[in-house]
Image 1 (cartoon, rainbow, N blue to C red):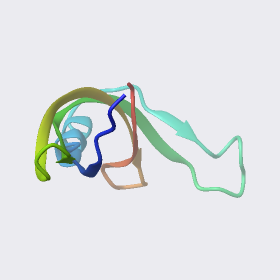
Image 2: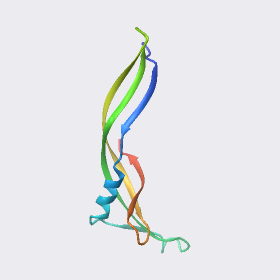
Image 3: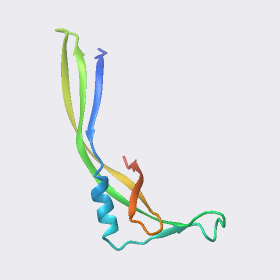
Image 4: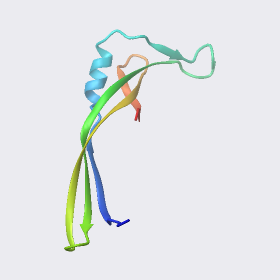
Length: 102
């Protein structure tokens, strides 16, 4: 099997955090709460989960061994991410962490 020396890999995808936060803050959803009853010394907080599609490309640069030139491949990417948002007391929901569903 012939090996191709990859020089760089660049991801051109973005999770639209501000759009997700606007969506969550302007919709009715089931809030979940932690704290209070479970841990008396901790502040309680509200949280919710959503999913978001992510689209973009992955750019792969490699060295073509036949003519010693740098080549590039653009691979389209489409996947879903889970997003967890937390709401502090008196504030809006903010994206706290996200994870790939693929």
